[in-house]
Image (cartoon, rainbow, N blue to C red; front, side, top):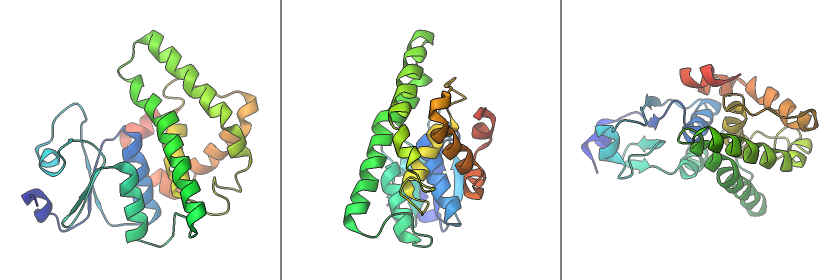
Length: 209
């Protein structure tokens, strides 16, 4: 185990201030009121501490004593199990599997597009904007059924995963039509949640339009 990990007596999250995966980990930490150091990393520069902990030098990276995790979905599920109140995953196996499948789809269909924006030229950004907008509209029935959260009556890791995407829409010039009122209403409701407000980096506060 690295010396860096051994030096850290408090749980530490290495996070990038503009990273959706880091954002959802910060939402979970805020929702559960976990005492943790949030170390913001510039993704354009190498961090010696992070490189010592994580061979991929990626964020988010979670350090909990001798444990180092660097997959975002693994991190948020670990936090939910490590700090079980309030629970953010269903109890029964079928519902848990459905929640994991939704998170997989969010990552594959939405996160994958968001991560391409910064490296894309204007023409590519227009295509990414169109693809993300269409993908969101295809998923509108999921938001129409929300009661008031995506899995029903309880806030969950699925909500934590979707919120960073919706928060960034205006930043990337994506406007949803009136037909997507259910998505817009859900987003506005989630953005008022204290844990969501408390999770935001300064960069994220600036990007929300």
